Length: 450
Image (cartoon, rainbow, N blue to C red):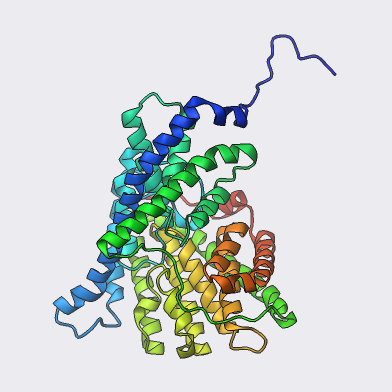
């Protein structure tokens, strides 16, 4: 073998096994376990505040103003105000309100302490006043930022690699119970991070520890306060028979349809995003008015509550499935169209996460197709969730788990169908989606104006 050139040394990557055996790693685990308690408590408080704000603005405020119930037009001005507040927050506070949801779940490290207030405020207003986004991305950012801030107060000279692990563990703790299981939250963050091999284990062990502690804190606080755990859950899942040949055909068709729909939503959101950034405050307010208008269209055309289009859809999945008999195919199609357009506008302008709206749109699409011969309701519901999630997130393992673990025992029955629909949707999505660099070049915009 050729000798090393004189004057050079081969950089040896750290041995993950040796890192885990060190005393410093054990100290890191203890630190993560301690930090998991306040971080998960803060995440619970954030979700409780979002829930209270939704109830206050959508139910209590109209009643206080003398309305008999919430008028169908109420979301229009409410979302306009939300857009104005979010636009001002993004413009004037550090950190541009955090992660841009149109760009998917990306791992960009923990935010600085100065950015945390802007992230919290932008997400709180977006989620509390009805934008079609979920809380997972803000919780990931806030959990990681709070954990890093706390550890730097205690140990300002901590190694940057250890700080990164602490930030990841804070994110694990913050989303531990949100998806119904700490395991699901862990898979989401693992797959989004892109880590692999033994180095994944180095970062995963502290994250799993923080997620487990976070789930316990969520359960304890939910029981103590009587507010529940804010976890994703279904309580009435119709029975599903074993997969049939016809349903495997539907899995392929649904995967293709979800890929096309997801690509359309994603491209339109990315197309709108730089145009919103040119006139941040005005454009975000207009995006809010559009989201409210979509809720109004749905309410007036179907006679149903406008809230079906608003918010993330996390807590609407259970009544959607349990009340499926009351939804005609036409009503579901209107719901899908209005929710998808509101989702697209929210992705381009507001702050939040993309997971739960994708699940809701996919679930409604699968339910609509189940009105046709050869497709069971539960199978269509699960396949729709998995296929739309992977189309929007490009995280195939997480998408399969989200669609199946949510359904409990019935999820095991339909898992082969979900896997087929997810794989088809994933491959088609990658084939029809342009590389990020090419899309950014095509849709580049000048600097935003003040």
